[in-house]
Image (cartoon, rainbow, N blue to C red):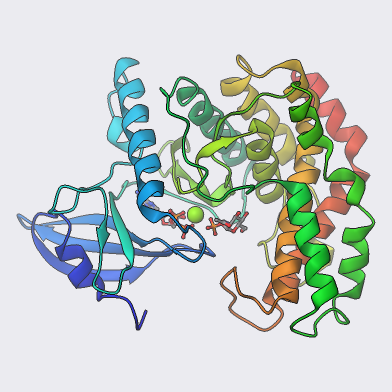
Length: 368
Ligand code: ADP
Ligand code: GN1
Ligand code: MG
């Protein structure tokens, strides 16, 4: 934070009524910095989410914000047209800067944005109950559905080739060859695990290239903790973290949700004996996703639901492993070996998906 402006000064550049009370670091993201800011307005605490956009990762933050602005406006328009009464809890709402822009740039050249906080709902880093899995999947499917008629132009690719698994695999191979941080030796079992699974990386890319799987507007970072679940009703109320909303494959979204919501542990669990796919969570994810997305998915997308879990979990695993080998320059880390621990959990989940493939196929078939 040393080279970034004080959060109070940042908050002051947004059009927030009332007096600044406090700002606390918030969430557990690996890329941006998030703060929950409290303002006192007419004797009432009102909260906001202020975020620094990591411009090392998102190299076009202003264009990224144009995506977010378009997407949130479209969601609100669609929700209102559908007669939803509490649209302010169903889609993120940007707070404009005093200048009227959808972001501010501080004196150090950092880009910040501000959302209204959604109250009475929270995100979960770890799954606790199948109902949460169902609701999270239903909410992400609904999100895809609402964005299916986003008017042209095409959204910006905020990170080009983000889910291009072949590129990710080649980047891992480069990282192994270069071994700039001299970490290939301790990561040998993980390197072998990854290299043995090269055959997986082109499956969805090829199906898309053959025209079997369409490009749609997708979220691309559908971790369980990127959906807010209502405290009172348990409903998946709002999809958040919109930086990677861009053209993609629906299967990336479903797969990433399986990665995080069928695993009983945190993403960086050290005790791998605890890491395994929970079939009851997978079943709830399939049912929840099909409840909202079932109407628009094509047969080729449905046919790859089980595979998508394995593929995206593998992809995130090789990204963690490559970052470990390169000296932890991309994902925030909080302890030595953190990215390697994360990669191990992903690979244990890949193995568990492999072992349970038939069972998962049966679950998808039974869901219709
Ligand atoms: P990151 O990129 O750091 O993951 P997120 O946008 O996911 O950033 O926000 C981090 C956390 O902050 C979320 O997991 C959620 O708990 C909380 N959060 C984000 N936006 C809102 C919001 N508008 N209202 C309430 N909580 C929010
Ligand atoms: C990052 O920003 P955050 O923490 O929600 C990453 C995702 C990974 C995820 C793994 C822009 O997401 O792709 O799946 O970590 N986001 C980016 O937890 O790289
Ligand atoms: Mg997030």
